[in-house]
Image (spheres, rainbow over the protein chains, first blue to last red):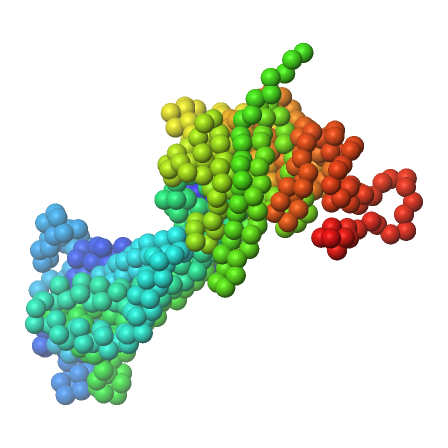
Length: 347
Length: 282
């Protein structure tokens, strides 16, 4: 079934494109320290709000243009003709741990000395937007995956079992679900986040946020899965399986779950953007990821500056574009996957 | 030649009641019947008479109490199937008693290939068996599916109704049960396929020595295939006996009325005969 999935995806260009885009995003997140020329906190107060540095091809290699600050009050930079610095590929830079395990100093590209390569410009303290975007993607993208994993697993376990067994289990489970759904999610999130703030540092806070989002999110999924489980359970192939002596547990996983796949896939791919946007909103409000870490939401909140619009520092809004692309890609991919998984559409 | 007629399965005073919120429905009101080894017992009756429910109750496939309560005794090889533990009844299901149902298209899981589903049936009761694929292909061939090597990868919706029913039969037989319960196996199929399936069942019965409980409302099939018959009406057995005696010499007015309803080729009728229930209740 898995081999078929890949083959089917290859024959659907739109879905395939989205899959590739998302793969690139996630791979970049994994290899962020390698790809990013700078860390998230490397400041340069002489080069604040620097526009993206252009690249030129000279003397058989890529070079980065060097700019000069012509107006320090308005952060205007101009290219000084003839001034450029070579870009070194696979060069040594700041140390990091490759995949968190292997120490390394190699980066995809670096420039020497005081020159900076800002592929997407710099922010108010001269930090490279591109690097922060990459490091931020680690948080923003992974929150979605972790969040839906928790939500789907809890939703399936509670919803699937309730729908299949019915009776008291179903009754109490659904009352709990309804209770959870009645709690205003956003306020709970803000309240918990504020209450727990002194106890966790930024990295741990990340997990706290994910867990809170998942706890709020799973209830709705559970209820829907329960309804579907109930309807699948009354289909005759479940009776046929029971009549052969199959155990309830195996029936749940072998018959009910696969028939839920279509819904779960679409629900998952539609929920991931929700988590990403949720984290972005939280960080935007200052309640999510804090400095000096980076996340797309945090970067957007820092772009909330009149200067950005008046002086056209468009590059500071690229996290918004990243979120936008990610959300659309997930939606289209989810749709495509659902088409593939539905066996009736197999010709 | 003397035939020892051993009773394989015996149901005594079977009562099945469904409990709704304010009311209850007595689907089966105290029936007793027995299935003889190697023979075919037909259960005939109109819709709602309690035939399917009776069949399902044999291996406790009906909803649990309090929704549905079953009382009485169903004896198979010395055990009362209604009172043995959950684990034991699961071992009876499939291995001793297997089912085939009316709608083959819904009896198969749409997301798995037919080969996978037959393999599941085999693995359930013969966990140590090797070379499952060969067994699956063999079982498909045994029920008359052509090119089984290619077809076992097919999905249920790619098969016609007749073939789906054959796959169902293959699944039921995968564990080589002693008793096959067929709940209106051909009602959803057209007449020519019906004959093929019934011939298949006959052949399999001969080869495997199975006993069959056949639920149907088609007297033609009964006459051709069954040895004994019980006639059910509103949850009770109104007549039972060998097929010959019941069909040729019906005693109960309901049986007579049922038989009179069968349209005959060649006999001219302006209106089809129907059953006058008022007269039966009297």
